[in-house]
Length: 119
Ligand code: SF4
Ligand code: SF4
Image 1 (spheres, protein in one colour):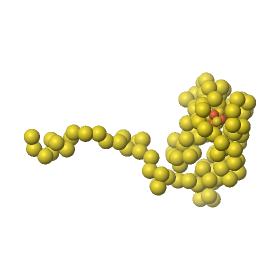
Image 2: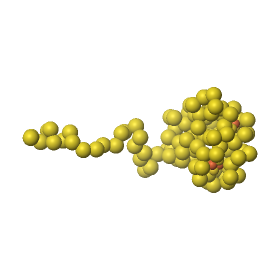
Image 3: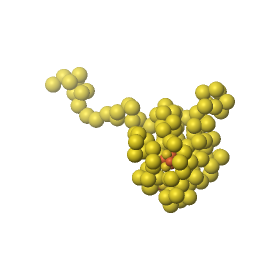
Image 4: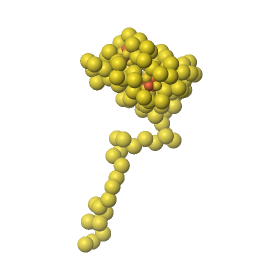
């Protein structure tokens, strides 16, 4: 078998799931964390997601949104923040006392500022 056929063998990382932490945009994460320090306490248990009102009607997942903020994945975050109804139900169940509603509000605010080059 020649070399070109051999190159097709093996595993690759799907580029859409490749997280490059050196190249990630930390502006939104820093904006949120500075103003809502409780965001640091999230340990991704998913309690908020399980109880989320919006998540019962739309493809919204607060735990995933927190991960987007941490990883600096701005594009998927952009749509995610618009789905929260800010009802505050998730606040009642978070075992770490994260002010989740404020996290969503701040993330939405940060994205608007980012778009206006104000971050
Ligand atoms: S319930 Fe609290 S600790 Fe658990 S994933 Fe949601 S924000 Fe994080
Ligand atoms: S405030 Fe947003 S994330 Fe929390 S339960 Fe309500 S809709 Fe879901």
